[in-house]
Amino acid sequence: GTKGRFVTFPFSSLGPNLVSAFASPTPVYRLRRGHTTLDGNGFMTVAAPQRVQIKAVVYPATGRDVQVLPEGKRTEETIHVISTTELRTASPGANPADQIEYQGKTYEVSTLKDWNANARFYSVLATRVNTALSEV
Image (tube, rainbow, N blue to C red):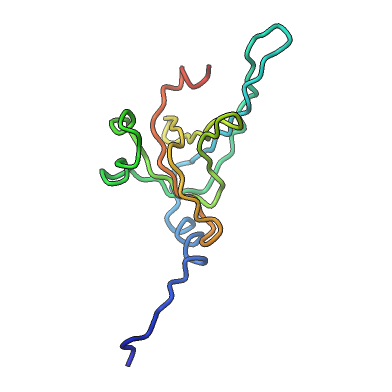
């Protein structure tokens, strides 16, 4: 019998296959924004974001998902995104958070679970941003 046997789960091959199998038919884009710098006259300049279409599974975040967000963001519209493309949160002094464009709305990556080393995918929560403000 199989009683007492340890069964391993093939995380490394499952992650990318799940993303491929369940990827959104609606285009999903990652916006990777550049650093904010000061020009010679002291004005802030921001490089145009790199906009790349990615393969991703996108679904509404659950109540349990949003518990990991800071209190002020828990009421924001939040999506859960799983992708084989690297997604990153803000790193103060290094880079702003990636943004996700999906169904005409823009979301900013708030939390990241990096499963790339073990399973070759990234799992993030992204909260809706006001695009007029995010362009500034």
